[in-house]
Amino acid sequence: MLLRDEAILRSRLHDLFLDLIIDREQKIAFTRQVVTDNIDVPVLLRRAPLTFLESALVLFLRQRLTEADTRGERAVVSRTELLEHLQVFERDRNVDHARFERQRENAFEKAKTLNLLHRLRGGDDRFEISPTLKLLFPAEEIQALTQSYTALTQTAHPADTSHGEEQAE
Image 1 (cartoon, rainbow, N blue to C red):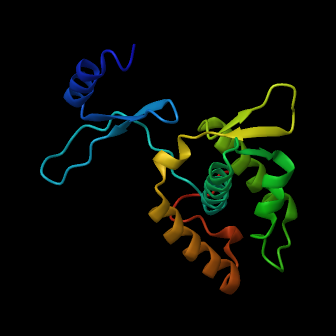
Image 2: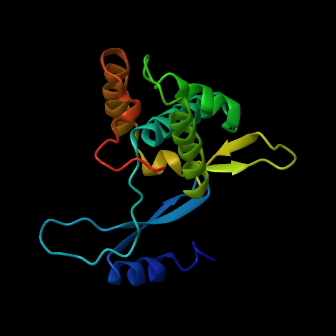
């Protein structure tokens, strides 16, 4: 139905300053806010600012999605694996381990809330990474962010950095 009425749907969404993004190969579609420098457009889609740990998790998920795609497989990760990946961002001399654990859990929960992770049936600990992630974050953006985050993990203590946003508690 979406493909049948694509032209009409695109037109109606454009009236609302939204673009329709369709990936026919992956069989997914979503809307994206139109960005223009010429005029102020109303913002109809909510934005979800990410903390440093949440951004690091998105980068990890995007990397795993790319790896799975190259193998022709579904991108599946475990909750344990995700939390272990985030562990590298804890400061060496962190005295508030409970706070850091909450931040890791919050990053995981936000990925689920944003529908970046979908629980697999019959698996409490296993999740499929949403293929929309590769459309939301193109490879060029991911590469630049990954380089920045890698440099930070080697030189700084990023666990209490909020990447311009307030830390979720």
